[in-house]
Amino acid sequence: MAPYESLYGRKCRSPVHWDEIGERKLLGPDMIREMAEAVTQIRQRMETAHSRQKSYSDQRRRMLEFSVGDQVFLKVAPMKGVMRFGRKGKLSPRYIGPFHITERIGDVAYRLDLPASMSQIHNVFHVSMLRKYVSNPFHILKHEPIELKENLSYTERPIRIIDQQILQLRKREISMVKVEWQNHNQDEDATWEMEEDMRNQYPELF
Image (cartoon, rainbow, N blue to C red):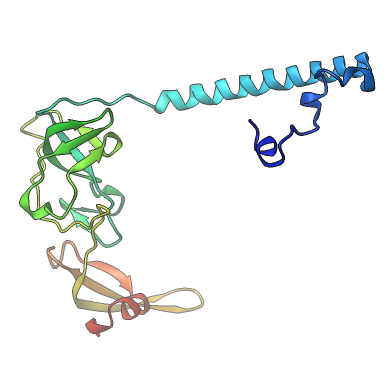
């Protein structure tokens, strides 16, 4: 039933229900017929719009299914300042692995064989977080130890500041610092950050 009917115990007095028994004598057959035709047209147009939107969504939707023993990549949530596999920013990989599937849980969940370094993570994941791995010796990404939180996110902490400069704009100056991040190369992986933001987040560096 509609929320209005469940709340008040009767149907809403809208044109949708004007053609019910007992209303025709009060409103007249012509008005009832016009309202019924209008409601029918509205429902048809809503069904057409719903079908159109569903067809757009189905083009991007795909059914994923894996078998026990398959290898899959696991989706993670990278944070700003994190570099994985020599890439950073938008080019940073969003998946780690591959991992073996050891068990299927229901229709849309799978249990993975995670390494000991990820023992704090629950090893059952929804199918939407998995991507199938096609074995290819030239496409293997070496798995690096990474400390993941329970929500599969990870953060990178800075080690020290290796350089500093002033960014000159048209009307103001911005102080920038070059930061060396944990577990990354000093020159290749260092990033320029705003000094004010770094002072607020990591005052121990200054």
